[in-house]
Length: 441
Picture 1: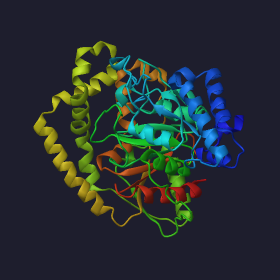
Picture 2: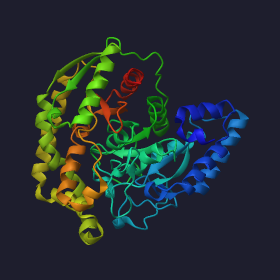
Picture 3: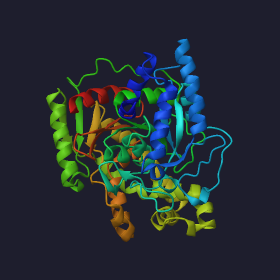
Picture 4: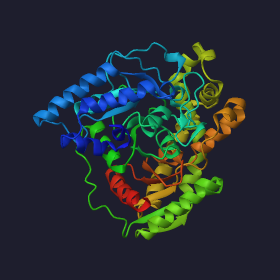
């Protein structure tokens, strides 16, 4: 049973289908592990054992009757503390929302429950999901699976570590500027940033509604595809026969000069393996990306502050300074600045799609830095700010351009390679990602 905690969600589902794994025993295995694990309180904001047991018992009954609802029916997963859970606190990692208890589940949670997935609990996040490091001195800071003295990446910090430490089969996070992909990369997981609009945001605590996306953090591309289907209530993507032979990738040079030694070497090694599997890879910078990146401060901070300014200014002292002041940065931009930035970004998005139309995916290192030490972030707010911007540098390309993106482990601990595709090509991304996963492993 201990081995169950480190299997893919898809393999657990197959075990349930074959009668080899009892969903209730599986859920009890995860709950028991959470009871004794040293890091549980730093990973989970709260567990939902009663709900989990009830859902697992129902999944067991369906399995015995031959009435399973899908390939992940009976598999226990975690949910970032942004997703509303009926009758259970959803506080988004901030004291600003302490005691907030919604009346209904988020739409994607309802979809997942209908597909038979078991809700283990709610995982810690950066305050209101506005940082890529996963450092949260207000609630908890989960550590990286590869370095207990370092942060795990954020803002879906607990979602990633719940999987990496074997306390959930998969985690559901959110991604506004990199919040699924950074913690996935730093914890050797697969992370899917869906395209904006792929999955419902109903019942999800917002950060920047025009950029927010829902996405899974998991152990395999197959898991990502099955979870994408369950969250959206649609059919699963067929990943059979996926191949890199003849695939064309553009290796994006924008920002590569900022990539530090370990993630750079890991990316180069990964590129060599993709080429060995048959991919053709070209390298160049894109003008559209270069012109879009400076718009980040206007677009993200302004929308975030517009969304949360009333709550923040009513009680600013309860927030961590680094996150609070990042929100307040949005106050310096006018409404006309924001509108003009969006109009320009829309033009740049169109230009980007034209520039990349001939490629199966654009690739780049998922993160240009390694996970910073928690103690260093505690000591120096300027260091926190600088590392946060670097952590999100590459992932932000996907959000600015409205893309779907997938990060895969390179084989070097806490590094990832990211594949980005057009916003209408998420299923193609999963197929090309599956082939890349095979090449990298």
